[in-house]
Image 1 (tube, rainbow, N blue to C red):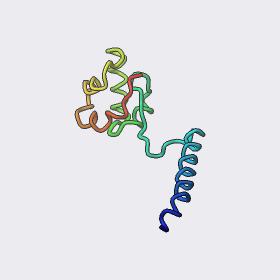
Image 2: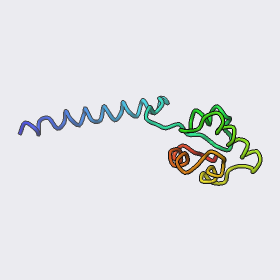
Image 3: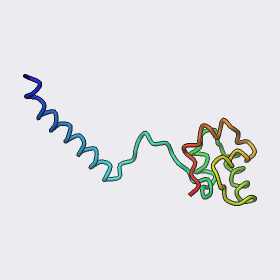
Image 4: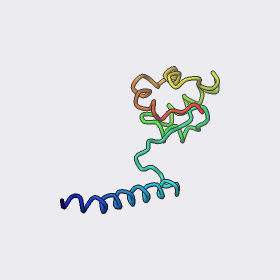
Length: 100
């Protein structure tokens, strides 16, 4: 019977936590766990290097050179055509890559 008496208190606590979480999201607090995302059709070399694992300055420049020579990337997998970007780099970053 003790549990029955505590249910309203637990519901109030749960509802308060939900509201507090929603209020934080509405205020635009950054999601700490979110991986950085990058638009490979618009990003500069520094942004590419910071957002993509295994991509430093030289690979970032190669991505931009490829984009300038061949036009915008039409798919994320097309990034593997860039010299120095292989299956592992693509796999490690596929959730971070944006085209628009």
